[in-house]
Image (tube, rainbow, N blue to C red; front, side, top):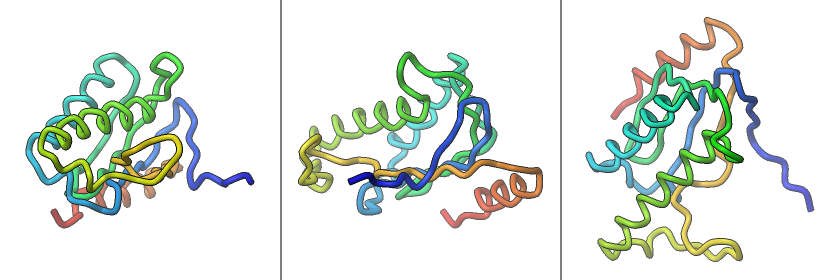
Length: 141
């Protein structure tokens, strides 16, 4: 059975991206987890894998307007971002004995930090970009 993905992206185009924590748990409420995201976005940017135009970190999800410039080895920058942050979050969750909240019954993994099928919508014009930037800055925190 083929499962249709919710979103698609291409290298070199600008997208509004949303990634949500498993079961909308408030994992991103802590200062440390927010800093982890910001620091890794900065690293990917410094290494010329991405360009970030705007972002907001909510307790349960993150919104970005970004451009993925090139692959990070075989991985997309989006894949690197989700994989690295999930790995780092899981290390902390295990240390705090709270990883059970993120356990899933799946053949390929024991835990899920980010929900599958993050949303990517291409920014097609300035009006759409402005709408998404306004949304990011108007989001209740």
